Image (tube, rainbow, N blue to C red; front, side, top):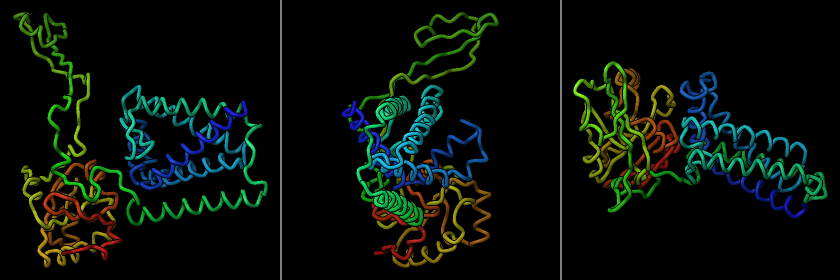
Length: 367
């Protein structure tokens, strides 16, 4: 039992630390997941949506600190009960996501490791079992350091370092970029589907009304439809998910026309990214005209990408008198491209060569 307890202790501790640090590297990304859970379509808790980022930062710091406390064996009862309650909540959350297919990625390991909802639930069940083992063998969980002062020091230093990392990435960008749009990525290549890649398979059901009663028909049954059948609807159910390229939902649209191919051919392209202008930093927006002028003087094509509607764009155009054009792109895509709002992305012939938080605009390299 002593050996099993120690194995469970180190496994749970390291997993909580790794999971927490990955999310702490990108708390904005984790907050997007929480925002999705709080939305009307899932738990219908809209009053928590404005607090999503604060909750995200708090949760991931707690994860790391609890992992460290478990490894050093400090504050044993507090740590075990905190771990138990946290994993109990996460287990419920991942089961709900998997069973009702509400949130397809819980964000447990950010963009570093994508898990399906059922995989996330399975992971949490394993952790729950291991934590119960820790309860059973808690008498074997002894402090690594005999000095109480040293245990407190390690705990406080961990908390300070986590706070500093969270502050840094929120005011700049993630230290490590695990996303599909990281620097060095060629957007066009990221959209390619390899030859022979598996394709998605669907079960297509056609609904027809026959003698006033709705009935389901498969594709091969349509040839034998009754003469009086009235079409109602067509439904597709995904049976097998095929290959999906890392970049599959990127477009640059204006007035119903997609300019993606045109801009991917640009030798010098600077994109200002703001998924929602209403949520953008006004200080950041105020800096964009000056940056745009500097870039244009260097021969750059400058555009802005947003998911905001035309009325919102017009409102901010009136306020800031922007000297560049806005193009439309999906909000989820723009959130994936960059975490700052607004942010700067430099592209050369379709390859992302630089990404910056608006607060780091002075570091922009214009060739």
